[in-house]
Image (cartoon, rainbow, N blue to C red; front, side, top):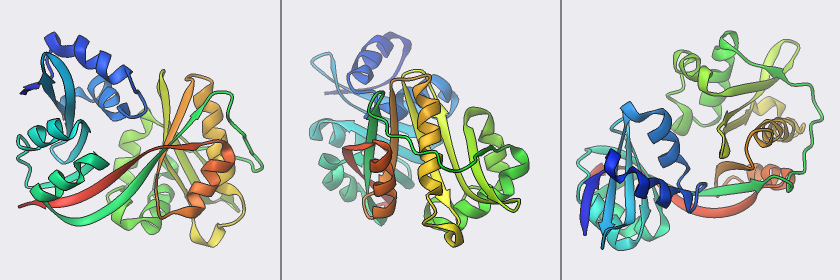
Length: 256
């Protein structure tokens, strides 16, 4: 098995492999197309075909796809001391053998095809901009500090040009938020969050529904990731029409 960096000569093979399952390979397609300067992709070639691939984003976030054999070969090339890895279940053993876990979660990829949506937009939503960044950061970091703790006001503003942000306000205060990336093949909802004092009002359902509506105006598929131990989020996404598609492990670890 050969391990080679993705190059112009290998791009046709790469895109053919990615397009076999765009939701599963979403971040490989997204980062290589839009964030190439921060992205490194290694391909595992077996008999001149791609058997697996590894994405390294900003020298911190790692994603692994392919067979168990290719995963082991790709991980041998990984030299990061600290990493946040998102891997398919067959790569759990080899990943933990290389990285001492400090945090492990099971993640569910949920998918919705156009025509399967069941939208419930029962609340007035407003577009969000840089003036709302502090309120967005407050909601995100309070809700999931271990996941969203790095989302400062400045970081949110920096990324607003690539996302569509919407929210719900009560008496001028931002209480529920969501964002979506509207790309042409698959739209992704990376964030839906509601202030703990304003839960159980249907806000997350309205925001998710609205973002799905925006996505399906441009793309045939919407995807969303959620932790498997978050039943309230899963319930909302099921209500809107999302169905479980794949499971992954997120492993934050230190190189052994």
